[in-house]
Length: 432
Image (cartoon, rainbow, N blue to C red):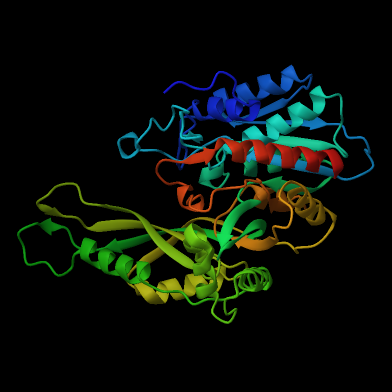
């Protein structure tokens, strides 16, 4: 399908980034971010900037640049994104996941939602400001990380450890998964991300006795593991509200007239976003992988499952203890990766500025804080005392399952949502 002759710059940037395959399979397996980082760096250089690169692991490239603001006495603001994407199985998609195709007024491809859309919005916003001969209100630090989809092990964690000078003088940061609109009953609202659940990736290990596949064999590692995985995967964790999610539930309930005493019912009034919001109200423990066996007629002596655990901030240890109880003492529970949860007040000058920027472009639509079920590189920056928010502003169609496309099939973002987001971000960095 042919593209329009003149695409907005933000769309071209997002399309070009999608066409650079930066697949990250995790645990060190990656196509690498180098080409995407070089593309971003070339764009920044065209604006007269001089980005710095840091590649602590071959092809896992990070870059950053500082843009002087009008008032250099103010604390600097970090705008950051990641350049990697999760894998895409091409045969499951209706388009080439790395084709950057434009169809039905939308840009399609892996990263269109997570998060090459926001990368492009950051770049285009800065580009429009600088080409107009303006400066941001304060110093801006633009940083693009590798390896976010693997917890930042070969990206933000190493950058924060080895290049903290990149973030000197910064106290706040903005990144992905917030600032987008959702339906609430017959109304619309924007969600501003002021917190993230903690992440714990687990391996469940079962042992048994190896033997011939034809035997009567009750000591079977695969059976033992399957029972543990099923028990954990079917566990319904109770709602446990935090300061942030109480505000989320109250704000949504007031908007749609729902009963705030039933948080799940309130979330269900948000259309396609319901599943995403329900996950923010409780711990989740999702099995994501199984490994066992090496031949059809051989019973293996070991089996392994991977579990993605997301807990409310500060609940990690009690959840791990409960997981061990659920799966039983004969299952070994290994933690392969763990990071912190975050919760930042929905208050202060930056929050007011983000809310105000949305109000100026979509008047009368409320902005509600929420706690994201996933995680971002804000967690690494928190080690430097930088408070992080999710603010990738997008005005979206009511029926678009935007949150369901994170790591899903047929990722796509409306072109007019990208241009909306660029305008909002440009106003924010011009004034805050």
